[in-house]
Image 1 (cartoon, helix red, strand yellow):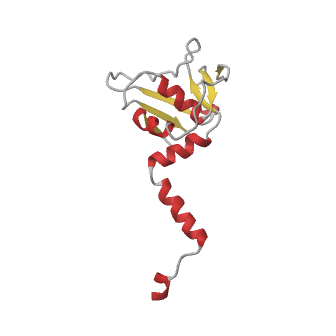
Image 2 (tube, one colour; image 1 turned 180 degrees about the vertical axis):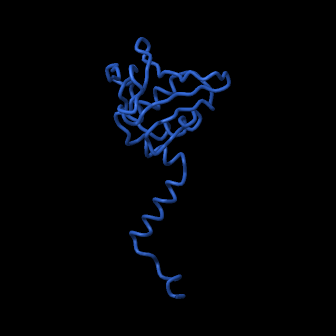
Image 3 (tube, one colour; image 1 turned 135 degrees about the vertical axis):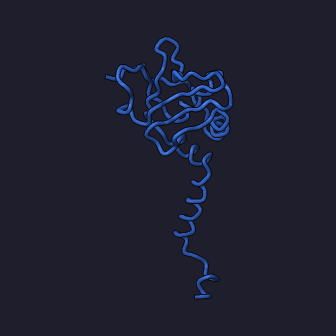
Length: 138
């Protein structure tokens, strides 16, 4: 029994532990999601291409909802498909406060504040505005 404490764990279990401890950090989880995410359905204003703000009666905070899968979109919604880095860039182009929240429905990361989005975006490659055409959900 005592020998087990002094024996170095196998490489695979050590890598699994490192991965699990990194994923416990919400910023690192968000970074991993935005780095690999593709085809996020982002409701936009068809004229300005700005992310649509949720209609919530609050003046101190703004809420935005995007969808990890287009099939989750409400009907009759104008949207663009974006990668994770395009979404972050689009979210950060909107003027707002550090406490504004972006909700990602259907993803491992459920939400991110503007302040945390700035931190995550600084670790990702720069993204150009989305080149996706504006689509309409059925």
